[in-house]
View (cartoon, rainbow, N blue to C red):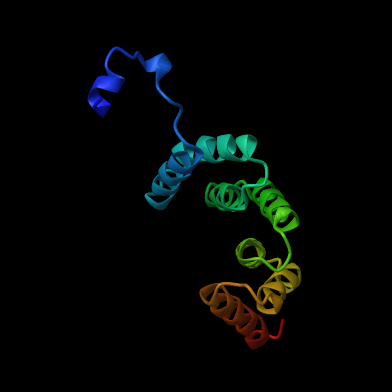
Amino acid sequence: MSAAFLGAGRNAAEEAPVSLHAKFNEAEQLRINGDYDSALPLYRQLVAAEEGNINARVALGMTLGFIGEFDESISELEKSTQQAAPGTIDAGWADLNLGKTYQMLGMFEESKTPLQKVLDNPNSDPRHRDEAEKQIAYLREFGL
């Protein structure tokens, strides 16, 4: 049977729910395009559906920061670092974003630990490691 035939006669309520992966991709596109208000509820749904989804939690934290919800942003990013398994690429991503957010908010002392953790993590993405090195060099340059 063809896919068209298999779908014939089904109403919208019978359609398969959007996959979490597809919802994440949609939220990412919205965020990248600056539509934070539309991306935010999707990230919240993803985190609620999959508590351990580090990428969704980091993206939620970043998006909250973009709209000026800094306390909640920090809270979500801190949760992402606590939930990510130590020594994983996810941990490096979470630590990098927490460190950069701390810096953006002028919390320079607080930024040092997560940025150093990116460098100490043997599984950090090399691009994340490079970014952490730049951020740490920035702190040193200004005597922080």
